[in-house]
Image (cartoon, rainbow over all chains, first blue to last red):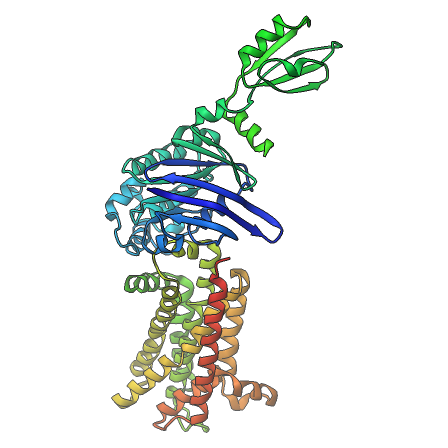
Length: 294
Length: 245
């Protein structure tokens, strides 16, 4: 069964098309990263999944139901980008209040443990650091034991150490067969924490697969060398080559097959090649290439 | 929802501003003024100063509590993202505004009861039990328009505007209602404004009950009309503030 299904979903704000014909299915139990630059439509999509925004057209289903119904049934927990706590309440009071709003909540102690808050349970919200506040917000997201957990750039305000702990906690929650969708623009996070990466740009899915598949599927690799005064013609016909850029005497060939392109460069041309440099694909390049094309 | 109300009460009782303006001020002023004028008699109502001031300060405290526990906290919750946090839980939207209203009415009680207690203990004010019950119930129910006004302000304005507007509204209503000094001392123009405010009707109902009389129909009607209008405004403003685009 699909935890999430977007069918041709569009969201328009006046003249701006934030989400443009989005089709996406996430089976129950998967951990999926929604990767994209700012303004790609990640937050809009998440807010639509929560029923906070209504699509201009198309249909969204969460476990086969409209988002509002899924929220009312306590199926979804979410950590949105912004969200302050009530300053006068303690961590335990806040978490306990929210968990009691759900029909099948997790026990309070378990939530506090999963979010590393046991030590801070009796501290008031206005005396928490930024990272600690984020942990409370994670605790609120899992408090109801939701089958679907949505995280919108959850580590934006965290330092490296809290980030690592955060993802460990998230994985512990995911390990129970729950579905997780998180938005991020950190490629590393997507690579390390998701089974599947969905790249979106300008409101559309531009790539969808494992991190390895996405790296392989795009012209993220390149070879460059000093061309000098020699002619550039014919280089675009080399095997694997998808693009040629010339800048100040240095030419860069984008390629989907680095080995084939380099071999052909030596065997099939008579060019005098100096200062050859190879650029392997990392997810960063893949991501930039994908979001640029779109 | 019972737990939600409990949480709302807990947080406001821990809020220094609420405690100072709403609990400490009215009781403090009552003690001060009743020592100065407690034994004088008011000509318009025939009440002893200690009784008149008890009603005035309780009315001020109740009015302040109703507005302070609604306008700014609610506006802040909308803007800080706490409202969104609640909207993505199974809590129905109407439960939020209802809880705010009920909590606000409960938060009015400390000022009413403490000022009454101060009057009994320091000025030996004594009313028949029936009169006490009538007075407290009337003054309690009479705060509904002010709580609704506070909620409307909180729904319509961002926190940095809601704060001064609620303050001005609260002190303005207290002043015009004749809670700080008698309406008979007001200049004519101010008097005519005072007569249409809900706080004026509210205080007059209190004074008349304390004097053992039946409240005027005009006063009861005045506050009823204000109540209906402000509750309607609060609901419309709430819908506007929580509408899903």
